[in-house]
Image (tube, rainbow, N blue to C red; front, side, top):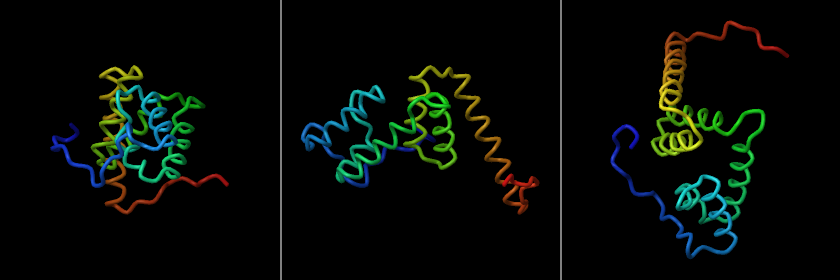
Length: 139
Protein backbone atom coordinates (compact mmCIF):
# COMPACT_ATOMS: atom_id res chain seq x y z
CA UNK A 1 0.00 0.00 0.00
CA UNK A 2 1.04 3.57 -0.67
CA UNK A 3 2.86 5.27 2.23
CA UNK A 4 1.96 2.50 4.67
CA UNK A 5 -1.63 3.70 5.05
CA UNK A 6 -4.16 1.22 6.37
CA UNK A 7 -6.96 0.33 3.97
CA UNK A 8 -9.83 2.75 4.24
CA UNK A 9 -13.49 2.09 3.63
CA UNK A 10 -14.96 4.02 0.67
CA UNK A 11 -16.81 7.21 1.63
CA UNK A 12 -19.83 6.02 -0.35
CA UNK A 13 -20.94 2.47 -1.01
CA UNK A 14 -19.66 1.01 -4.26
CA UNK A 15 -22.14 -0.18 -6.86
CA UNK A 16 -22.18 -3.95 -7.29
CA UNK A 17 -21.47 -4.52 -10.99
CA UNK A 18 -23.41 -7.79 -10.88
CA UNK A 19 -26.64 -5.95 -10.02
CA UNK A 20 -26.04 -2.70 -11.93
CA UNK A 21 -28.35 -1.37 -14.62
CA UNK A 22 -27.45 -2.70 -18.10
CA UNK A 23 -25.96 0.62 -19.32
CA UNK A 24 -23.81 0.84 -16.18
CA UNK A 25 -22.85 -2.83 -16.41
CA UNK A 26 -21.61 -2.29 -19.98
CA UNK A 27 -19.36 0.63 -18.97
CA UNK A 28 -18.02 -1.23 -15.94
CA UNK A 29 -17.19 -4.24 -18.11
CA UNK A 30 -15.40 -2.01 -20.64
CA UNK A 31 -13.37 -0.41 -17.83
CA UNK A 32 -12.53 -3.81 -16.37
CA UNK A 33 -11.28 -5.01 -19.75
CA UNK A 34 -9.45 -1.75 -20.55
CA UNK A 35 -7.45 -1.97 -17.33
CA UNK A 36 -7.14 -5.79 -17.54
CA UNK A 37 -8.58 -6.29 -14.06
CA UNK A 38 -10.72 -9.03 -12.57
CA UNK A 39 -13.16 -6.42 -11.23
CA UNK A 40 -13.90 -2.85 -12.39
CA UNK A 41 -11.74 -0.17 -10.73
CA UNK A 42 -13.30 1.12 -7.50
CA UNK A 43 -13.43 4.70 -8.77
CA UNK A 44 -15.86 3.61 -11.50
CA UNK A 45 -17.93 1.63 -8.98
CA UNK A 46 -18.29 4.82 -6.92
CA UNK A 47 -19.23 6.90 -9.96
CA UNK A 48 -21.78 4.30 -11.07
CA UNK A 49 -24.37 5.87 -8.73
CA UNK A 50 -24.79 8.50 -11.48
CA UNK A 51 -24.92 6.66 -14.83
CA UNK A 52 -24.70 9.85 -16.91
CA UNK A 53 -21.61 11.07 -15.09
CA UNK A 54 -20.05 7.61 -15.28
CA UNK A 55 -20.64 7.49 -19.05
CA UNK A 56 -19.09 10.93 -19.61
CA UNK A 57 -16.13 10.15 -17.36
CA UNK A 58 -15.51 6.82 -19.10
CA UNK A 59 -15.51 8.51 -22.53
CA UNK A 60 -12.93 10.99 -21.25
CA UNK A 61 -10.72 8.28 -19.72
CA UNK A 62 -10.77 6.17 -22.90
CA UNK A 63 -9.91 9.19 -25.02
CA UNK A 64 -7.16 10.45 -22.76
CA UNK A 65 -5.43 7.12 -22.23
CA UNK A 66 -5.69 5.93 -25.84
CA UNK A 67 -2.44 5.94 -27.78
CA UNK A 68 -1.92 9.24 -29.55
CA UNK A 69 1.08 11.57 -29.69
CA UNK A 70 1.99 9.89 -26.38
CA UNK A 71 1.65 6.17 -25.82
CA UNK A 72 -0.41 4.76 -22.97
CA UNK A 73 2.59 3.86 -20.81
CA UNK A 74 3.90 7.44 -20.98
CA UNK A 75 0.47 8.72 -19.97
CA UNK A 76 0.39 6.28 -17.05
CA UNK A 77 3.80 7.52 -15.90
CA UNK A 78 2.46 11.09 -15.96
CA UNK A 79 -0.68 10.05 -14.06
CA UNK A 80 1.49 8.24 -11.50
CA UNK A 81 3.62 11.37 -11.02
CA UNK A 82 0.52 13.54 -10.61
CA UNK A 83 -0.94 11.08 -8.09
CA UNK A 84 2.29 10.99 -6.08
CA UNK A 85 2.42 14.80 -6.12
CA UNK A 86 -1.20 15.00 -4.94
CA UNK A 87 -0.50 12.36 -2.28
CA UNK A 88 -3.28 10.19 -3.65
CA UNK A 89 -2.61 6.69 -2.39
CA UNK A 90 -5.38 5.27 -4.56
CA UNK A 91 -4.11 7.05 -7.69
CA UNK A 92 -0.46 6.20 -7.08
CA UNK A 93 -1.25 2.53 -6.49
CA UNK A 94 -3.59 2.38 -9.48
CA UNK A 95 -1.22 4.04 -11.97
CA UNK A 96 1.80 2.14 -10.63
CA UNK A 97 -0.09 -1.09 -11.32
CA UNK A 98 -0.85 0.12 -14.84
CA UNK A 99 2.78 1.15 -15.44
CA UNK A 100 3.99 -2.29 -14.46
CA UNK A 101 1.26 -4.04 -16.47
CA UNK A 102 2.22 -2.02 -19.55
CA UNK A 103 5.87 -3.01 -19.22
CA UNK A 104 7.62 -0.42 -17.05
CA UNK A 105 10.66 -1.88 -15.30
CA UNK A 106 11.41 -1.27 -11.64
CA UNK A 107 14.19 1.07 -12.81
CA UNK A 108 11.62 3.06 -14.82
CA UNK A 109 9.39 3.31 -11.73
CA UNK A 110 12.30 4.59 -9.62
CA UNK A 111 13.26 7.08 -12.34
CA UNK A 112 9.67 8.38 -12.49
CA UNK A 113 9.74 8.86 -8.70
CA UNK A 114 13.13 10.62 -8.88
CA UNK A 115 11.95 13.04 -11.57
CA UNK A 116 8.73 13.70 -9.66
CA UNK A 117 10.65 14.37 -6.45
CA UNK A 118 13.11 16.64 -8.24
CA UNK A 119 10.43 18.82 -9.82
CA UNK A 120 8.30 18.86 -6.67
CA UNK A 121 11.40 19.96 -4.74
CA UNK A 122 12.21 22.72 -7.26
CA UNK A 123 8.62 23.90 -7.13
CA UNK A 124 8.61 23.98 -3.33
CA UNK A 125 11.87 25.97 -3.26
CA UNK A 126 10.61 28.40 -5.91
CA UNK A 127 7.31 28.86 -4.06
CA UNK A 128 9.09 29.41 -0.75
CA UNK A 129 11.37 32.02 -2.34
CA UNK A 130 8.41 33.57 -4.20
CA UNK A 131 10.25 33.29 -7.50
CA UNK A 132 8.59 34.12 -10.80
CA UNK A 133 9.34 32.42 -14.12
CA UNK A 134 12.45 33.80 -15.83
CA UNK A 135 11.21 33.32 -19.38
CA UNK A 136 8.86 35.19 -21.64
CA UNK A 137 5.89 33.10 -22.76
CA UNK A 138 5.31 32.98 -26.51
CA UNK A 139 2.14 34.66 -27.83
